[in-house]
Image 1 (tube, rainbow, N blue to C red):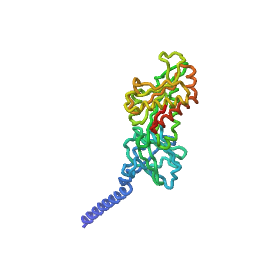
Image 2 (cartoon, rainbow, N blue to C red):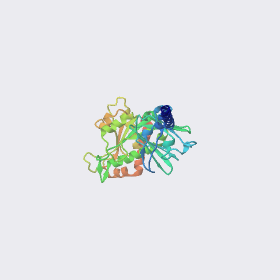
Image 3 (cartoon, rainbow, N blue to C red):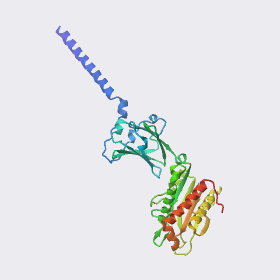
Image 4 (cartoon, rainbow, N blue to C red):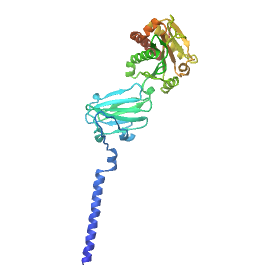
Length: 352
C-alpha cells in the first residue's frame, strides 16, 4: 500500500514538473519569439554621439519596393523633415525632430544594404540625424505618406537630365603656374566654385547635375579626373585653368584661349570649346587667343565626352593677374562658362 502511494506521489511530482516546464516554455516563447527578438533594437548612446545602425536594417522585402523605408512616429508632419545631399554624391543626410535613441526600439528601418557603406545616426536638441553613406556616387529621391519615409537610390544620369563635370586645374602638391606670389590652383578652384554656384537652380530642379573633380586644395591626378567623368557618364567635361609664358617670366602677353580634342570625330569638343571662348571674350573683354588643339594634354586627349580646357588669362601678365584674382572678374568668367554649358546642352553652336 505504502509502495503504491510512493509511486503515485512520484508520478504526481513528475507531472507537475512536466506541466510546469511546458507552461514556462509557452510563457518564454510568447514573450521571446524569434520574430520579435529579430526586430527589437536598442541603441545606447549619449547625445551628440554617432552610431552605426546599419545592422538594424530589416530585409528589403519590407521596404515596399523602395530601396529604403523608415517607419515614422504617428502624425509626423513631413514638412519638418530636412534633407541634405552632399555635392560628392556619396553621403545623404536627413533630420527628423523628436527622434532620439529609443526610435529603434519602437520603430524600424527596412531596405537593401547593397550599395551602402553604412547608416549613421545621432541626435541633438530633440532632432535625430541620419546619414546614408554610399560606396559610389548616388543620388537619393525621398518621398513619404505620413506613416513612412521612402528613399530610392539613383545613378546621376537617372536623377538629372544632364551631368556636367567641372575640373579645377591642379591642386595639392601641383600648384600650376606661379607669378607675383599668386598660385594658379587657387584661382582655378575659386572660379569653379563660383561656376558651380551658378548652377544652383538647375541642380535643385534636377535639370543638370554638377560634379567637381575637387572642391578643396586636394591633389587629383589626370587619370582620376578622367575616370571620374567617365564613371558618371558625364555629358560635358569643363576644365578651368590659367596660362603663363613658357619661361614663367613676366610678359605683356595676355588673353584667353580654349583647348579642345582634335580627335573627337563628332566635332562636339570643338563646338564646346568655341562656345566657351566666345562667352569668355564677350564677358571679360580679354584678347581672343582662339581655340587650340589640346590632345597633348591627358585630360583633353582621353575624355570620352565633349571637353573644353579653358585658360582664362595669363598670370605672367601683371595687369591680367590682378583681374584673375579679382572676385568680380572671377564671377564674370564663371557666368560666361555657365552660359556656354547651357548653350552646349541646348544644342546651340557658336555663330561667330
